[in-house]
Length: 525
Image (cartoon, rainbow, N blue to C red; front, top):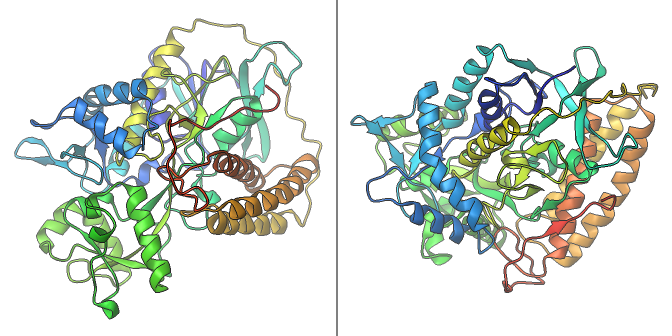
């Protein structure tokens, strides 16, 4: 399969890059499942942009710096903030139906923001944006979408015995034919999202298995700041609910966190931080974790019932309807919530154009570490980052010229299929996610990290044996990537001898100076 650009991932980052490139390039978009599956579609809150009369770029930058606990890269932060209004204008031109009020965009507020600057489409912004972009992509002849294609590995000059650090394309498993296909392109963009499925409880979809991060690492790219896993404070807690996020905007519009009614329904956030429910996510998640452990609770409660039913139906129709499916009337009672793994703040190290250590390889979106998020992502900066760096990568690719197209070898699929493979993969997946939750979660210790690394080493050897001997499946590929990313998360956590932002270690409770990113370098480089 021969293209000018191959993009892996069909979220906001991948589709934005594809649309930016389509006027001049033949683009392939690979996605593991259907084109609409992914984290972008689930984003509820919105997109941060300075559009209010009393707002400023400097205020947005400072809010991002504060949330990032001293680790945000100033150049990346200013680039993203200043590009935000233009990105919103681009989406509006494409037809995204953002919420309006009196003829202007309605701006809401979320935790960590000092002003109302969240552009949204009620409480389903990601779905509205994704649907619009999917329609645009499907109407663009220069873009070919390959659904149910799972990234196996990148093809590099080094792997072919040639000199240089260059990405030449990739192998992808086509589930429809159960064969591995070769995609050749002088430019490859990884927009594969984060790695939330490495944890037992997550707001992420099943597709969030760290595929791009793991593949880029194996290909020789550095990664950075992977110890900073953001746990969203408020995921719906119900035995039949699965990974449903209760938007930050609920707290932005006055929602308060309470203990159970059996304990008086006491509001507890003011005792943890003067910003109360509007504190950054790391603060709120740790406060909830503290209260749950202190009182032996399965969950806490988010109460927005003091707002009128009309207000809730207008601003949070999807949350209201989803909770109602489980017998929870948010107009009259609080919502049971727990923290859950939500966002991978670190990732593959890139520059301001999305370029990596490999020539011809770009990474954009959650899989990348641009320096924007620092030690903790500010709410609603993620969709914004996707668009800014998708545009930057597209501009870089357009100016890259037409390098030589190499002859690439076909995938060696002489391996056999083993009847026990599925059972082993299932058990290993479950074990990995449980010990990562227990040992590498919201609160960490050196001993817990050591235990996690020991388990990872055992699993990694077992999985590598399977990968080397048996026919690849999506489950096997995802597990291989999750174990690799889990190792990188733990190695990064062990390297940070302090507590900062999302990384809290009881053995290193203080924040050290100066603030330094954690950068891991592959042994092969």
